[in-house]
Image (tube, rainbow, N blue to C red; front, side, top):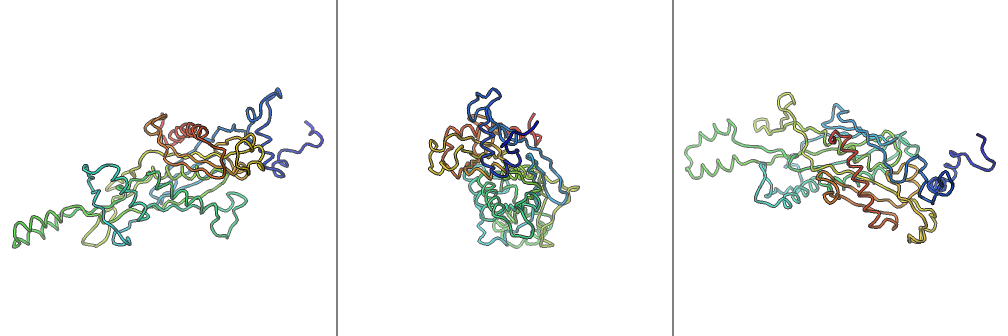
Amino acid sequence: MTQQKGQLARPIFAKIAPYEFLVANLVRPSSDGEGQQGQNGTRPNGRTPDESRDFDVHTGSLSQAHGSAAVRLGRTRVICGVRGEILPVDNIPQYRPSSITTAAGSDSVAPSVVEADNRRQLREYDLLVPNLELATGSAPEFLPGGPPSVLAQVLSTRLYALLHSSGLVDAESLKIWHQPGNKKDVEEAETEMEVEEDDDEEAEEEDRSPVLKAYWTLYIDLLFLSFDGNPLDAAWAAIVAALRDTRLPHARWNADRDRFICSPSSVTPAPPLTLRGLPVATTAVVCVENRKRQQRQSSDAAGAYWILEDPDRLEEGQCHETVTVVVDCSKGTGKNTAVRALSKSGGVLVGPEELHMLVASAEKRWTGLSKALGMGP
């Protein structure tokens, strides 16, 4: 088919005027030429505005990490590795022993109080350390030899905040306890019979109480192999999948050697990391028909607009208003859906009605990721 005179080819149109190219696809009428604007158009990538890409998840890819996952979201690919290191409490500046939780748990304290104290420990002791790198060649704008890009630093900060606000990791599963009362302790106690019986019982009771000796610090490293938009959703899915794959070895304190000893998995199987629920992030951007009129901060002045879920690199670069919803449907959808986080920036076009629609879309995406992780039917 010959190209009409004065009509630009799609690749040239996209490079010369990317925003106009995006809007032209969204307002494209139906085949009969009578479709309404925004009703029958599709995005340049062929998806409808409310259509998201499917997650493709593979776990256990890295042999030298305690947990790992590779996630593909369209042409965005990221790999995540989780490595645990022991942090003795003696090495924690301004360490404050907690009187709320114990190794066996406490039934007399409200769960909300225990949860607040666990989050305090994760935050104050920096037990969750994410680090993100956009590999050279993953996208044209990422050049070799330079410092971490602004995007990488922003994503690391957002992932750090989301790790703490979502309550995904249980601090109790990161604690390393020492239980006095082994054979050596008993033999030494039997040689001290000269002490008064009451004092002896009190000392024995005190010595045999569990002692918190260290925490596991989780270093969460992410590397983008290819970048085609929506890095937050892909990175967060990789973190969740890698944490679900994490197996920390059984660690104990050896008083004779004055050090921590980790048992091999062949001797003591490593249990999975205790996680709370399955929070899933869904990001969308807003594309307006008239970008200049959007500066008036009015939905009426901006004209027609479209909410594009799971944006690609072209859409992210041309749209300024962004919304991210993190939901957890582990207890069911609808009224049982828990919104773990909500962030919005860059405009005023998304209101309560649009947010409810995004939450409904996030519920569908939660189902898709849970199936990709092998949790669904």
